[in-house]
Length: 616
Image 1 (cartoon, rainbow, N blue to C red):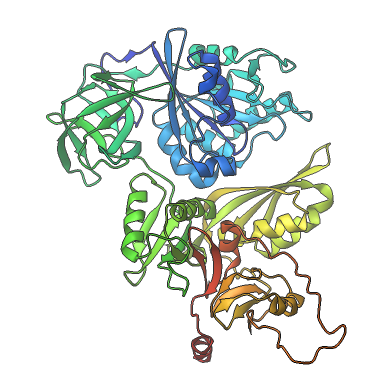
Image 2 (cartoon, helix red, strand yellow):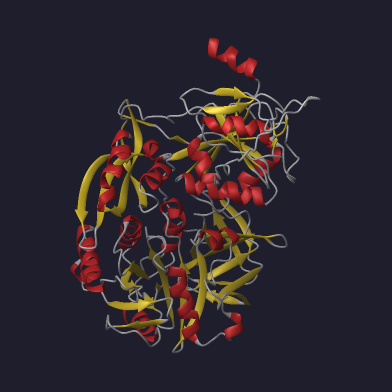
């Protein structure tokens, strides 16, 4: 049976020379989207007014965070050849996007930072590309950095390819030195001007056109889904064999092997930054089909009268789960939320499942609670952030790793953690990491005073570790991790060392009360903020929780003495991002997420009920 993205066996396979399908893969923040900007400009198909920085970061979250979350498809014409370019995420939590996109490509541009060199996600995506037999072109990017070391990085890429078992042909890979931001590429690492034409020339020379079987019946794997309020689901994929035309009778082969018969109402090809309607498309083209009956990622679209199924996309399993439930706090519905019920949350999660292949959703004991599993905290927090911006309110529980039973023994996910840090902070990194069951695998020091540490650590040990390492190294640690494998469960991992301050009243925070409480440690709220009984308002200096009254006002009297009034100076409250809040909470706490606010709270709001539970 043929592999996805490759033509089925045929006596007369053909190779198209008028098209190239390439994916751009790299570690996070190595410059993929910026390089695409340069390629778009080089193509000469756009006016300057049409182009802006990071054109493909269309999502608000992508622009704010400076990372790619969703894979994108564009097409440019160069020297009479259509080049389909697929931009992919660089963070391990969005690996599901990468795995799907590679099924549509014949070659990959592997971007590597000229200073940082290959990183954990570089290894991950490169390994996936090699598994599919894709032709690599290495782009050593950001050579204009003052500390760039392009030739050393090129050698490191070669070593990485050897480790991944690359063939002799693959090891003889083409490469260019480039600066996506400045818009030039060259065979000379010392070049500091020009354009990216040398890179496009190498794409035409070294990336083969797709091998196709135009005379066989239609076969296409659905690798991406889009949604339109007017036409419903839009299925995107690469045609492996045959052709598709508007009005063609097709069958969508589902996971259980059963076909759903339907008709293609529209065929779209990718052109420039969008899609254009066409009457037909043939093998090798990346197309978007409209009108298919309930398509899902991994389905095969084939001729109704000659049904042949392609192997479904396999995606790495989720490693982390969180409890999603309704927001039942006293402030529910008061922060602009439009979707509050469990039915709203369920419908939204179902829609997410249609295109987020790395996500899993199941009911957790009641119809109001859902166990949502994903690749990591960033993967799930992006979903939560997207939902709150759409007007959803919900409560989210502490992240939990997924435990598997193998040969009667419990196994948990382990991750490869890499930390780049100034050598003076190595001890500050080692202590908290090893305390959380991390085992040092490798440690190297570079000439510029940066140490590179590699650990194998349980995924649950990573929860909350990033914040601790950044604090311990004064923000200078560069931290990355990726899934390694499931191993037998380790011992206990230390929990949060401090308890919390829990409000015992409903009302607005008063500065007088905060002045007394801030002596105990950091606060999470400021004067005039709304609080309620059971809401977490700060961190205790000790390891136990303390119930406090943050709305207590100063008692007024008829007698005043000189100097009796206090000048209250409050420290700014600790500003918690969504990821920090999710890493901070314990098992008996929730993060309350609304369109306007992120709050921390106890699962059981009333102190009397919490005491009763502790006594059991």
